[in-house]
Length: 222
Image (tube, rainbow, N blue to C red; front, side):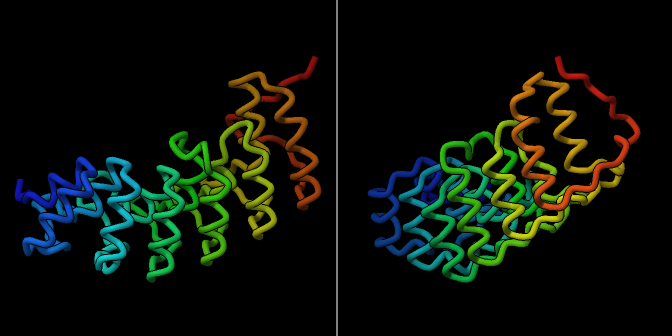
């Protein structure tokens, strides 16, 4: 598979072994047969300290490089998805592009709002991305913006995106609006409190009420 000892050490996040291998002369940016650098592998495994080491020691030149496999995520996508805020900030400081899109068009901001791995520090990850110029209106191939991707019960995420200029009336390629997504989430979870809490936020941001999109149904509240 073209992997060298540095790849294996990175995959297991063993910083002591990584430093020994590097001090013995191993290059940092060596690529395996899948197109992965040690930085890709240590991020995929979720090791913050090892990832920070690679970025600071010279692998910042690969932070915008996509995976050849998976969906073409860059290290920035991976850090955002996994909630690795320290690593994310470190990469963006060194020239990382916060608006990179993977194969389906997802940006790191999409990753931060939609993946459960990022739950424990999702807001901080979003703030970091936005502070480095992440565009909240970039859409994926289905024309879904990060605001469309916000999961149920994440009102703070919606508020942050709207404050950053997210378009509240944007529709995806099926004509579904952010409100349609909220109604759909209510239908799946029956969490009326979320819908009632998010509606004033959307209205304040300029939401235009209109009939639901085709394929959506109306729900009555009791």
